[in-house]
Image 1 (cartoon, rainbow, N blue to C red):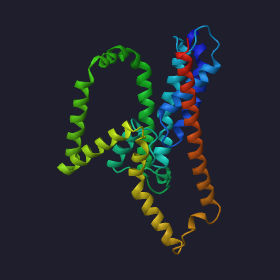
Image 2 (image 1 turned 90 degrees about the vertical axis):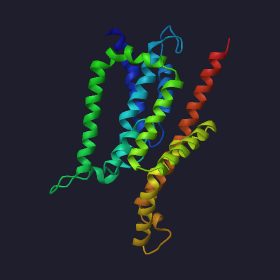
Image 3 (image 1 turned 60 degrees about the vertical axis):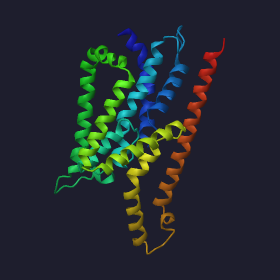
Image 4 (image 1 turned 30 degrees about the vertical axis):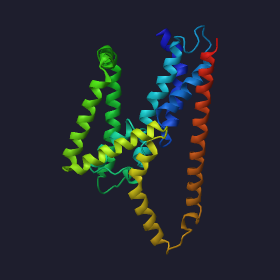
Length: 271
């Protein structure tokens, strides 16, 4: 308990950082972990430095990393934008297949009828609470058992994952064309990763392209074919300005995180 009390300031600070980063669409956990680590290193006053076995470094990094998972549901459910490919996009895709359409209509309260999308959203919240409670109670007990998965070579586990992915894709669509598209997108993702190009913008574009095009076409027709309808009034320019600020702030945060990582690496390599 004494160690936990000592770690609570680091956990609280990184938790706040991870929540803010997770609420921003399309950033992910890597930036949150880097910012949490940087903030924890500035707060640390112990004898053991970060990177040399200080538990504060682990607590600061993992608290920020874990806080992103819950906050990712904010843009995923309210805007339909997944914040993390590995976690939220899977939940988002599964719910979309089941008839769940993320967007502002999810949280619409109707007094005369039940909103099924709102029920599904609160079901997700309940599952996350139950999952965290189970992880708190039983996660540590299974940690050593699950750690043995690290010993499985990639040459064994990756073909199994690929086989399950191909089978599930074929079962869902029932045509080999879906499998060919899957393999083509897999090659594209591999080339993007090799080139250092993030995959998440492509995923976001795939999800939002159709509803965005439909909404813009409807608004264009409703405005009487006015090409400047997005810049009329107060609300639309305000949201466009906020969107631009989010994009710029995301770039600044990524730049600061990369600068902190390079500084940490150069310090570690110094004699």
